[in-house]
Image (cartoon, rainbow, N blue to C red; front, side):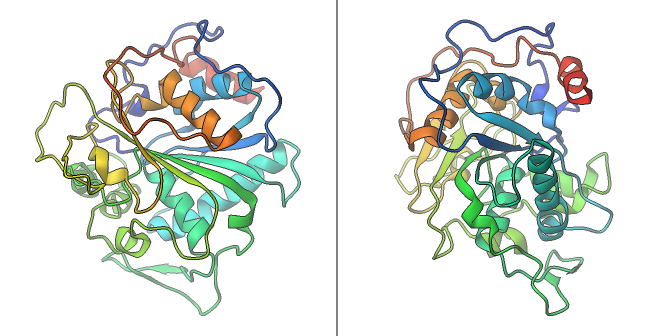
Length: 318
């Protein structure tokens, strides 16, 4: 997630109420346990697992076993090194701590940059990424660093506000230069449309990868800075952004794409608290159901309202 515009990331104003339960009707009913229960939740740029505190509640009620993982860059790392040497081990450890076997299958959900890191692990298992160059490229020692078995373990991938075509709002370039933690700044550069990382990934699934993808873009109802609208899905209609990523820059060629338009939880920093979007995630993971491509603006339940950040972290410490 791109956090330049708010110090508290996805949770800014999301309602840090006392710990409790989800509001009635905010979670889909679990008729039977899904075939694959683990669902790994990956936060984005400058963020933390607590953006998923409402998601954990809702997805658990839907019969899944949600597992929010944490990652951060080490000094000098760029996105490829973070994906291979940071995120992938974090996923393996989190699944192991929950009692799953090393070859256990899981669904994956990535918010913002988290989706790009997951795509890199899935689509480029033979990447050799030992060293990062200042311009954003990378090189290696001749020995691949990826895991060829990783893609086979992922049952589905949902990308929420993931800049598959680059962020395109200027926020990534701002993060590249002035983000408060200098270790994160190079990753801000990696989110720009012309960065080696974004260009390497492209916005088409690598041939041979056959697991289902769903991309969800967000159109905020009241953008507080103007950027020329962008048509990223080729339908001839250009749309605005979510305060960090152009809504249609999330789209991938040939993959299902939905736009989230609501009056609440409809921006980059709150969409992970949208009960309706989390319902889309559960439906796609359970049965491959794709949400409507776009709908009218409407009210949305706040899945994070009943659990505070503090309660989330206390629950993880137990």
